[in-house]
Image (tube, rainbow, N blue to C red):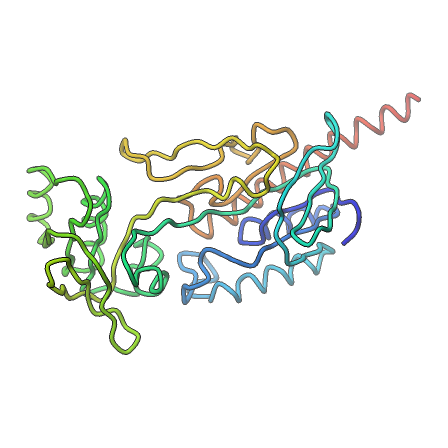
Length: 318
C-alpha cells in the first residue's frame, strides 16, 4: 500500500468494486480494502444481474477485482478498524486490523449488512442454499417445490403471498409472528397458503438437503426451502470513528432493519464520505448495488475535480 490515496474504498463487494472501477478509469489513485466476507458467499449464483445471470458470487468478485487492477486500482485483504479525519476539512486516516494505516482524500464505504436470522437451530447452516430471503434472487431455483415461510414479524403474510408466485405449495409457519388478522387469514386461504401454528424449533435435513421444519409439539412439516425475514443490520460501525448516521428501515409501518442515510449520489452527512450498496439500501440486489457504486464513484470524482480546480486557481493567483 502507498501512504496516500485520493480514494479509499472500504468493502470489496459489487458496490465497492464498481465504485473503484469508476474511479480508477477516471485516473484516480484508489485503494480497496476488503475483509473477504461477502453477504452472498453461500449462494450458488448471482441472479437478476443482466449479462451475469447465475455467475457464482466468488467468480463475479474475482472478475471485478481483475478489472479494477487493470486500471491501476489497488486491492488488499484486511479489515478496517477505524477511520478519522486528521483535521477540519482535511484528509482521512484509515487504520487496518494489522496496525497499518493509509490516508485518503475521500472515503467510499460499502461494508454491506448482516442478516440477523431467526434463532432456530440449523437455520444459519442452510443460509443461502435452501434457507432464503429474496424470491427474486432465489425463487426460480425453488419453483414448484414445497416452500415454507417462517414468520417472525408482521410481514410474514406479505412474504408468504409473495412466494406463492413461484409455487402453489406454500406453507406459512406462524412461529413468533403476531396473531394473523381475519383479513390476512382470508387472503392466505384465497391463495391456498397453508398456515401452521406453533413454534418452529429445528430444521430437518437429509443427504444435505432440507426436508422439513420441526415444531415444538413434535410435528415435522415437509418443505424443501424456507423463506425467512431476518433483521437487516447495516455494518455502519465499520469503520468506527466516522460517526455515520444510522436510521431505522421501515416497511409497511414496521422496522425491519437499519441503514446509513445518504443523498442520491451516496453522499452522507459526514463531508468527504460516501456510501453505496446494502449499507445504504438494505433491500438492494447485487445489480443495484453495483449501479450505486458507479454513481457514488462518479460523484466522488466530480467532488475531487472541484477541489482540484479550487487549488489550481489559488496557485495561479498566488
